[in-house]
Image 1: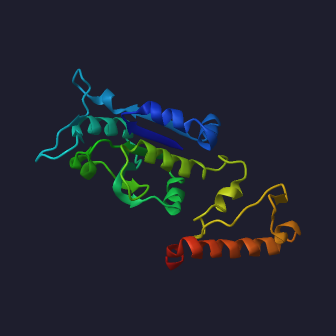
Image 2 (image 1 turned 60 degrees about the vertical axis):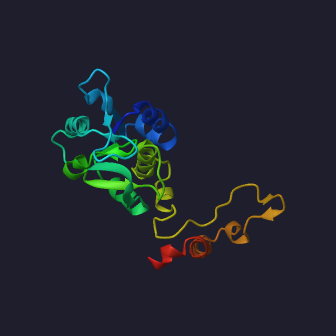
Length: 224
């Protein structure tokens, strides 16, 4: 799988994505992350990518010319989706991550400042994603979140493939509690059911705990 990231902070993307599961997946050749500096697609000596908005107002807007050049250069003849990271996009969830993990090529567009020229959204953007109902300085951190969520689903990215399938939200529920050694910690014991070796009872217990935790913390998931 290949991610192309259009950004004005390529170093931020490359540094962050090189660690943990995504970093190991890249080293193993399972995924490729290529960054493209938007300033490389400008024509003026100052490499300006933004300008003031028509009609007035605070903030700066990414200009359409460098964005169009960058997207066309990166996309080429491929049918790769162009995903704009914006607080106005649909919320990223596990189902979305699952769908994107089946793609061979994804282009992530990182806005900054006030946003990008609307004409770029109309002509080039195929999807818009948000990671929450809040505003960040730019799209780089959300792009990293998207890649992390997707890469761990690629076969071979994590040691135990079933682990990703048991994550929170994969079955519409939060995950169950998990324990490891020691058996007793600060007077607190591991639940007895996890110690008896009866895998059927353990599975039932985890399902019950997942349902309980979801009901207590995210009842909206049960409504859905």
